[in-house]
Length: 403
Ligand code: HAM
Image (tube, rainbow, N blue to C red; front, top):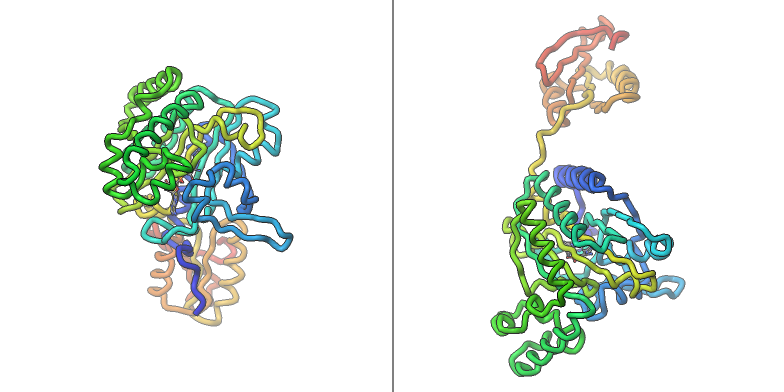
């Protein structure tokens, strides 16, 4: 039997209904915040991700679905959505036009990670990217947007915040951190020794327990921010407090992608096991310029859809449309004709085998039909059809012409 690849799942039935429900809720919230849908290709030049997500990140270093296509181009299945949206933003010259642009997207992302519960190789994100607003009010708005989506879905979460500083305060902090790491060079793990050379700040979210104990005493960027970053972070926290949104500051929250500066945030759930991050995002004011666009402030987030699915309680399924069935094989052609007529305006499920009334009622209930319409021997003689309203529980026999 041919099976799907490891970490790549089919989305079926009840799970798909949750998926669809999540998208309806998230797209509605995005529209209310003035975001417009954008769709970018699943495949991009590998360079795009190397230059945005960063060569030193695990995503680019270890997890890319990268290959050479038939034309000899080095391409890659997108591991995340931001890079492609930024590429589209620059390619379509929005940066040159200036102004404010807000986009949202959803779709599959690909990371060659070790699959486990909540960690897939093909997974889905719902994300937003906002361009042209440098104010930290936008950061607060986006965080409130995630809150609105989770609240609408009945999902409980905690929120962690950090500031990753800017081009003024990050470089001196980086030096301080390197000095600290040099002093503990023999104690830190192999990965952290590598990170020290490529992107030292990433050591802070090392999962090695010995490193974690050590980094509790590492210099904190939060206490070395420049005055503008300090002010922005204070404004952000006071805006969230004003909106009664609880948060904790996690000075080790560095995110796994290199493009962030200033605000970084993550929403976590304690209800889904080890992979507890259900959304993450932050500000990336330098990325557009770094990808050869005109400097433009930007901020965004992405929600991991699969991690939410089991937390979503679906509203009770709405009964709609008709279920058509026959009790006699002879009536089947008529059932098909009537079903086809009704289908022009309503959802119709037709059963192609003659069955007992009890079996038809059971089927109609299973497919969430509002009406169960059945032709038996008597109805066929009278050119009529028996109909039961499965909500009001009323039943009647009507002539076929009046159906
Ligand atoms: P990220 O934190 O890498 O950020 O991913 C966002 C969310 O995607 C995570 O919080 C998690 O829920 C989900 N996720 C990530 N990897 C997997 C996986 N292997 N299996 C299942 N779910 C996963 C980004 O991707 C950024 N582009 C977010 C962003 C947008 N920042 C600014 N704008």
